[in-house]
Length: 231
Image 1 (cartoon, rainbow, N blue to C red):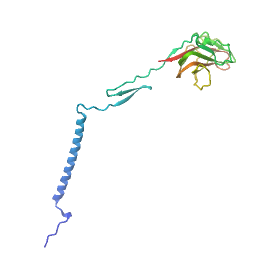
Image 2 (image 1 turned 180 degrees about the vertical axis):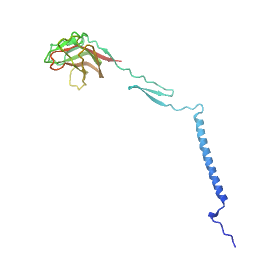
Image 3 (image 1 turned 60 degrees about the vertical axis):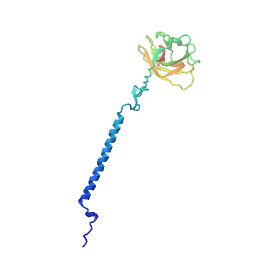
Image 4 (image 1 turned 180 degrees about the horizontal axis):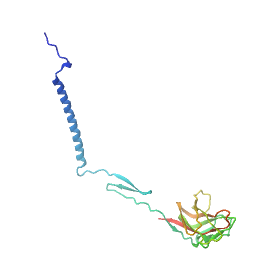
């Protein structure tokens, strides 16, 4: 009688053990190869003579300046832009100072007294009017940066000026050009006020409107200095 043939399910335990050992051997080989790759990459990184690529960094310095730094040989540093400084503009005989509206108050006010550097020589706006409009025509274009105002030291019964409106004109002529008008509140007490224009504009003239409180009688307007912006 022939012995029954063994099926695949009846294989000896030795065959299964051999297959398991082979699988473990493959895993060990793969792990060794991965470790060797990492070591080889590290050796290449730290070999002498290697030239890493430059790293670009941007460092913020204040709200308007930045420094670009490069670790390579072509590194450059950008200096921050200096802020504007305000200095008094000397209005000599070449400067024309007049009423902004030619058909009103012609020869009525001594407008140049507003810019003579002496607050005691103030201009009085006669009621019922409470404002004057002045046109300053400069001999050449200037970067206008601000206005300094000093009220009269002793205005007596006159009401102090309360509002100053400023517009820089490109050609020294008052036109409906849509240019910005900046308003400032004036103090009535002693001491000077310095107003900085938010936009430093190049112009050949200025329109100034100085007004007092309505219904308070005559208004005293003190000394005005035009400030140019310089770096």
